[in-house]
Amino acid sequence: MPCSLIVGGFYGDEGKGKIASYLAVKDDVGIVARGGVGPNAGHTVFWRGKLYKMRMLPSGFVNPKCRLLIGPGVLVNPEVFLKETTLLKVENRVGIDFQCAIIERQHIDRDRASNYLKRKIATTGTGCGPCNVDRVGRTVKLAKDVPKLKRFLVDVPLEVNRAINDEKTVLIEGTQGTFLSLFHGTYPYVTSKDVTASSIAADIGVGPKSVSEVIVVFKAYVTRVGGGPLKGELIEEEAEKKGWAEVATVTGRKRRSAPFDFGLAKRAVMLNGATQIAITKLDILFPECKRVTSFKDLPRQAMEFIEKVETSTKTPVNMLGTGPSVEAIIDRR
Ligand code: IMP
Ligand code: MG
Image 1 (cartoon, rainbow, N blue to C red):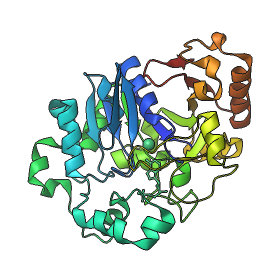
Image 2: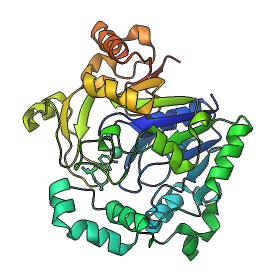
Image 3: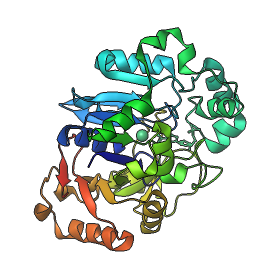
């Protein structure tokens, strides 16, 4: 499969980072390109005993042969980008598109000083919303105007489309989740742009016909940070008991949680045109699944849950996360 696209099916934090890093290694991917909003994202990757929390770079960094690109639709915070690039020592294989919009201090200040954004919507405070406002107003600074980014600048759409035409394996990594989409989410409790599969592809400059697989990622339960509705939300003690009480990667806030939502899952498959489903944290829902790597070794209850997801969405569940590390996965493809 030359070009696959990974997208979040709920409210972000579904574990896209784990699935992307697994595929980057397993499928010998040549390029991982990141779409999505910007450094409001936090992708957690647990690789070879180390925990990485990535906000700008694609999670495919775990494969040392993988080229790492950031598409023109993504907002770049140069400090965050340079910090991650140095930390991972990927200077020689990372590229940003010339046309990425730049988040400046004033965007972060505007995000945090606004009562509406900070209190009501409860944004991540990373400046993404105000930066997208300036992009629409056509006043924003682009990556090509920033000297310290010069050595990383490339034409991402050209590089990615060439790779696809040469039948190299390309992975496109989305951020946030379907119901945080500005168009399809729980407005106004959403992020500052559409984040469904079509927009993620457009962030990179890849047309819909060039995408061969759309993988929607769900967690075995639903979490959400910030404001907005959450069907079946648990009280904090209940969430703690179940092990669903998570802490947000970017903001350190507590995530709200609820049981898996079959209605949302079905709609996410529709909105993204998903061809495959990945479900993470199966081991949190069914502890006997921990580190299981073969479907036949799953407990009956877990199998029934997977079958129910497949029947209600009419889409195959091809990957199952059974532990934090990149390798803890059941691959049924
Ligand atoms: P913003 O994207 O920072 O403007 O925040 C808008 C809403 O989206 C808030 O509810 C955030 O908590 C949420 N959000 C943005 N990015 C992510 C993410 O990567 N994971 C989970 N929630 C996010
Ligand atoms: Mg996250």
